[in-house]
Length: 447
Image 1 (cartoon, rainbow, N blue to C red):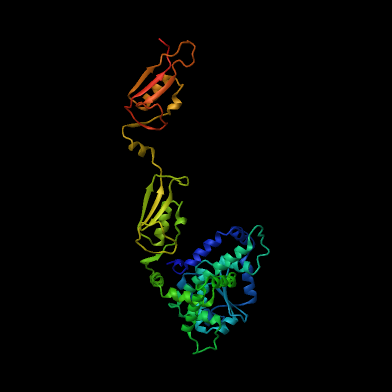
Image 2 (image 1 turned 135 degrees about the horizontal axis):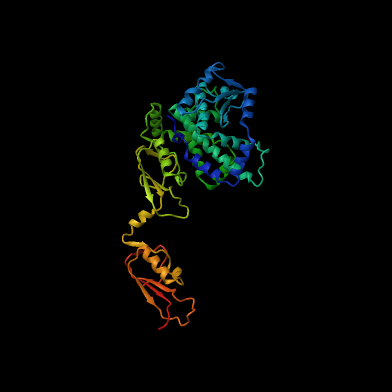
């Protein structure tokens, strides 16, 4: 069954992406990028310049990839080897993602850590990071000069992209932890990238590196000045500090969320429905949808206890037949990624105005006034009488005013006022007892 990537997406990743999308100019950049960028160019460059790994080309390395993809529920991407002394791995593409590793990576890390690196890159694919990471990398490297970006504030976009890209690394690290079953290899990978090569053997001390990460965090938290200097140093970095990554990896591997994640993946691999899974929606994403369609989505996601709750109270934004509110276990406060049991109570509140028949049943023995008091004034009394009688009113009286002295007076026989149970002001559609006393006062000749 399909795997929900929310099991390993970091909360900071979600929040940073939402903040990035809210930056003025992000939408313009995305539209321009999609019009101008062609990922086939990158694929052509890979095919012409690098070595594509396969069952027949460096099969020992390629064989590491398919089991990772199966575990994360993604298609196996193309894998390329690039001649570059800098140890690195990256993922590009959207419709057909691909992974590139460098020769420097193979020279730097032990072979047993390579699956961890590949799982990290596959994590970016599983979390749907690749399009925005491609945009961010090109923006940070000044490669979007061909895209018109008039009136777009580049520095805020760069800073927001860099921050999100750093946060997205935490999610990809979690994907690697899921594949390894432990955080030890991810933390060692961070330590290798920080300065240790293959040549370092038994002297390597992982716990000492974790202590270094702890001391760093205490140093930054110690003063606002240190925090400010950290921001100055790393605002435009697209990767988090190695020590921080290692610390985040271990903290998550020791958490209850990690235990739930592993139980979830175990159930998925057995093609069973997990008892708990991360909720795939934000509350705001659900509002305005049709309740039947939303219920179908939730059932497909594995949730079984879904109720409709109709409301007839409307607001300016209410649309008939659309979801106006969602409660999960009686609470409005929930977010994408929250762990929920499959039988969690989900209420879909939707707006549906009362029908005419329903309204009638709410007013037994009453009739809606066919017009307002103001609209009756000046109309022929006879017409008003028959209109009210035909509407169903049974207690209609006539009150002659005797105020006309001229035979050709145009007001003769016309309504002066209509009172309903003594009220001379009423609205059209007002519910009124059918036996209410209605007095029609109209102009007649003086005696």
